[in-house]
Image 1 (cartoon, rainbow, N blue to C red):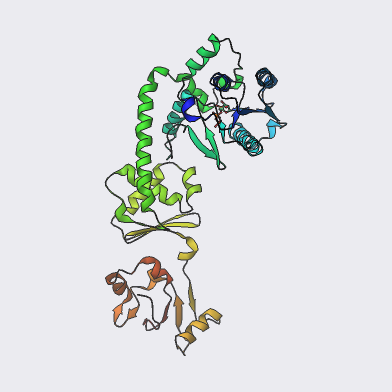
Image 2: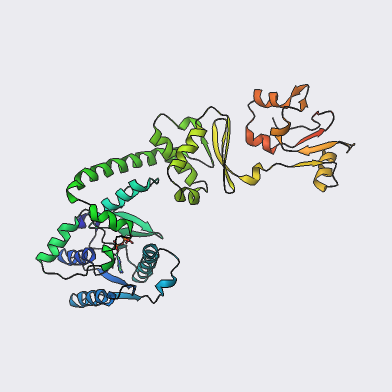
Length: 382
Ligand SMILES: Nc1ncnc2c1ncn2[C@@H]1O[C@H](COP(=O)(O)OP(=O)(O)OP(=O)(O)O)[C@@H](O)[C@H]1O
């Protein structure tokens, strides 16, 4: 696995924490003739014993003449607003990226193992959130920099066994046994003899996502999606709608909410209704006959002006040769007036319906009429 992902001609940044996984990877690299790497270590000073980790990292690097860089964090942890784990991750990855630039490296190496992969998958399953990849990917990007995880297929027990057999020292993180973290709770109940079954499950799911991804590239264009792209496969429908929304400013909202919200959207969109408007913040997911689109709620704001001195109002009347300003209403509120207003002796609603005028167009149409006669006085887009 290590050999497959890595190239002898490439330069790497290795995140070495001093824990068994990254110590294993460090030795694995050297044993397999990969010497073109530098080590990065972040000393968070979070635990009382964190200097031990730092000393081990220094000792290992000095022994094998590997260049190392340390980031020493001085932070008052009582005042930390975010969750420590995700804060620490950002600090760590940004530091790796900084060295990546300085060293003109090709990739960052992270020592996630098979247990981490499985744990991540099980957590994703528990959280029921829509994901782009199940488990951990052996190759990913952070701020456009390549991250490789060379020992992702190796079990924790094999790592420990190898280190113990070779008498290689490592540090056990004392916060890892802290059951307050969801991952640590899960880790406690994880059984390695279930891994093969779970790996197969993960692979099938990821393959499915990959197929969907390839299909989706051709389907999603601009900010409109045709309803005929949905089919009987619920999973596909959810994936398609999720991807579409993700590309149309909904990301923030989607990552925050549970998968069920996508199901709820789908139910409405795939219903018989010709018009669906779902408002989230300042965005509206709109089903407009056979098109799905995302619009800014401002675009669908309605207005109604009557007998006004307003410049816009006056201009419109002049443009439409309307001399008498009395009782004149200017509005885009088609929902309110379509079945009251007459256009060439037919109700506007009938014209809209017969011509299947899309709803966005209806919002854009400005209606000018005499309040008493209810006859449309201007030409509209139909
Ligand atoms: N303090 C550190 N200094 C350098 N590298 C580190 C440090 N902590 C973690 N790493 C790197 O990240 C790997 C994963 O660490 P760990 O499992 O603690 O993090 P995680 O929160 O599960 O995942 P992530 O790396 O995405 O944050 C380690 O094996 C090591 O390569």
